[in-house]
Image (cartoon, rainbow, N blue to C red; front, side, top):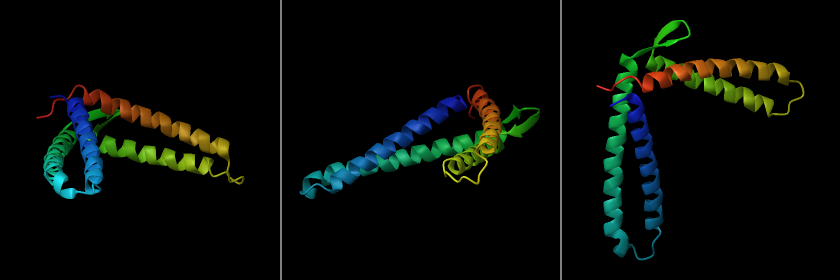
Amino acid sequence: MLVGEVIRRKNETKRKIEELEFYLEKLSNVPNIKESAVIYTDVLSNVFSLLDEYQSYLILLERSNIKNEIKVGSSNVKVSDAVKLRDATNKKMEFITSLINNNDASLNVPDLMTNRDKLMEEFILINNSIEKSDWSANVD
């Protein structure tokens, strides 16, 4: 199975967990809990099973990301490191955006926007390398 497939399955599993947790919350507000107790138990069991499945996907991805290397620009890096770099770059962009939206007249907004644009180019480069790897690398 390709890494990209595992990521999609992991994300779908996470979505199911969130939906069932929301459903469990609604069930807990049912006035006559005795009637819904069996359903509640079944749904809870399903959530636990999905949590195990989700954790398995995370472990598979972690192993793959540590093992596989990708080329980012002119450097070879482990996918796990590239993911951290991408996430850190994204946080920097979000921080700059919050500064821009702060409406502080003392800030040089055009310079901040230029810095954010540079970070966006870095983010795109890293993310493209990760995505190419996701759809070409197999999970062992």
